[in-house]
Image 1 (cartoon, rainbow over the protein chains, first blue to last red):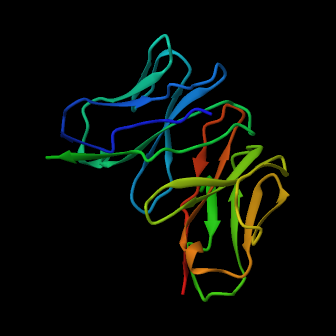
Image 2 (spheres, one colour):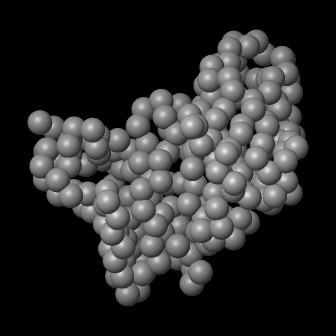
Length: 111
Length: 111
C-alpha cells in the first residue's frame, strides 16, 4: 500500500519554475504515479501520469528516478492561475487498486 | 459537453432524511468512483464500480448505497443522514489507463 508524502505548502512567483516532490517509498512494481490539480470548489483535474524516467505534456513534466521512491512534478513558468492544491497519487491500472489521496501541496503563486 | 456531471450541485437537508446524488459520464469509461471530501479537504474514496460491478467498497456506513444502472451512471443514495455526512461528494470515472476525471462535486449540508 503506497502512501505518499508531500510538502503541505509552497510559495512561488509568476514566471518561475515550480517543482513539487512526492515521496512514495512503498511503491509497488505495477504502480503508476499520477498528479492532480484542484481549485477551490472544483473537482480534481488530471495533470500527468508516469511510470519511470520523464514524462512531459503541454502543462507539466514528471520526473521519476530509477528507484521510483519519489517523483517531482515540474510546472514551467507558473502564473497566478496555477494557485491550487496538487495531489500525488500512486496506484495500479487495475480498477481494484487501492486509491489513497494524500493531503496535497497547497501552491500559492504571487505576482 | 460535460464529461462527468453530477446533480444536484448543492443539497441542504435535515438529519434523518434520505437523499440521492446522481452521476453521469459521457467518456465511455468502464470505471466510476465516489469520493468524499471533508472540511479538512481530505479526499477519501468510498466506492468504485467497474462496468456496473462493485470493485472497491471502503469502510463506509451501510447507510450509503451506490447503484450503477449502466456503466455511464453511478448514483449514491444516503439513508438517515447525519451531521457528519456534510461534505463535498465527488464522482469520477477512469479509462483503463487509470487517470481519473472528476465531476464538479455535490456540496451536501445536513442540518
